[in-house]
Length: 269
Image 1 (cartoon, helix red, strand yellow):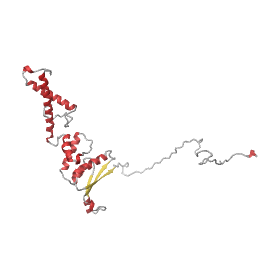
Image 2: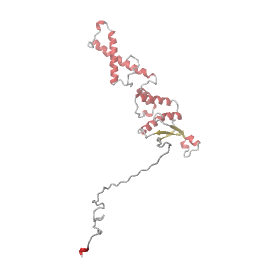
Image 3: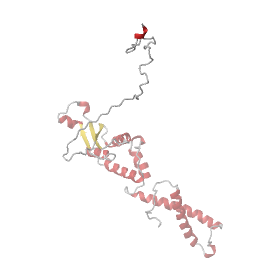
Image 4: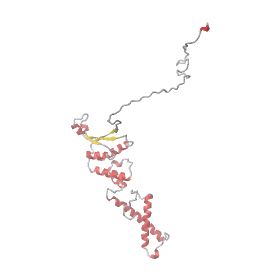
């Protein structure tokens, strides 16, 4: 790849100068620098193999120059937010903006994480307004989001609110479909983002409203009711068993009289 030009095949854009990909790029760049240094020497100093002392020294110099060139290429990507490396955003923006250095736990890759921070910066500079709070919620959830300020509810004649609720607002997030498995992580991350966007003197409440989609099973759109029931007995059909406990004994173990009917006693007299 040409020097000081972005490599479209590059996968890792972090600021750590280590790893298999970095070592491969460093080896390729060092070899290119080494060949350039060799051609600067007189013809009687050029060696086709790396063996003489001067070639080993030039190779060491080439490695350090290649390391410097790769670092300069990475720094050159940080001149604009659209191409800034994720690690740079994490250390310079995320750590300084979030309270106490606590960053939300997000399962994002490098590109998703950078997109998240860029959107967060855009929302942050919009100001602490309801539109910014709504955009912050949409960073994590897709659906309808409604932000309602408490003083507006009071003006509309809502009951249950007093002067203590003046500086508060409510967030209703409509979640269509099944219960998100990572909802608690989303709730925690959302609260951390709202703490840096909302006005400092306000309190808020988040409500997740779940709604299921209904597909009617009738062409006219009517709901068809049906009932089904089933009864079963866990006993098996074995009439030889006695299910009343111990035969001829009551629950205290005393012998009880057993009623006998249908026996022939005419021959006993």
